Every structure is written in C-alpha cells, then in structure tokens.
Amino acid sequence: MLLADAAQVADGKLYILGGGWSITGPEAVPSAVAIKVGVDWHEFDAQHHWELFLEDADGNLVTFDTPEGAQSIEVRGDFSASEPSGVPVGTPVDVPIAVNFGPIPLAAGSRYTWRLVIDGESLVGADVSFTTRPPAELAE
Image (cartoon, rainbow, N blue to C red; front, side, top):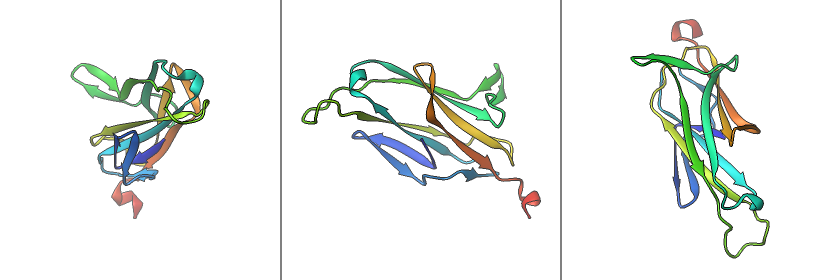
C-alpha cells in the first residue's frame, strides 16, 4: 500500500502521481491509496472482498457528522485473478487497486491509518499510516 496524490489502474498496472508521502496538511487535499494485492495461484478464479477503513491513532474508525448521522470513511470492492497464460504454474498474480479521495477534513497534528481487510482478515502489511501537520501558527 502506498499513499499518493492520485492513482489509477490501467492495463493491469498502477499509475501513481505524487506517491510515497506520509505527512500532509494541515489543510485538506485530495489523496489516494494505491494497493497491490498478490494473489497466489491456488486462489485463482475465487472471488475476494476487500474493505478499506480510515482509523485514528487509537485504532478507532474516523467518523464525520452528516445529515444521516455519524459516518465513517469506508470503501469496499471485490476482485478475482485468473491464471495468466504463458507463465510457469504457481506464478502469483498482482491485482492493482486505486482508491481516490477528495479533500478529507482531518484534525491537524494527528496520526491516521488506512487499514485494508481482505475476506474479513487484516493482513500483515495491509495498512499505511500518515500524519497531518499542526496548524501553521503552531508550526512556527
């Protein structure tokens, strides 16, 4: 997983703009999470469900007040991979996923984590954290 300014999937590849940051703000700006999932050959043609959650430093879902009540930032999707032709049996396949966000109004001077869950399981390395800068008057 990688934080970026923007990301896109095309032709089975991730295209990343402004990738690899871990500090942002304090103002809200557009951002993206670029994800590369490795699918082992024994999981080919199986449907997998993924979920991406934004958590605060304590591991709680980040929520925002909306007319419908408090809402967390969650994105969900499904993927599958098929055996590629012309490669040795047992070769894993990479599945790229790009999730773009508009400006998210996060608290300045705070720590956050995007957590990826696949098929209900949090995998090792399936998270990426970042920090928002303190307000400009405090940073001087």
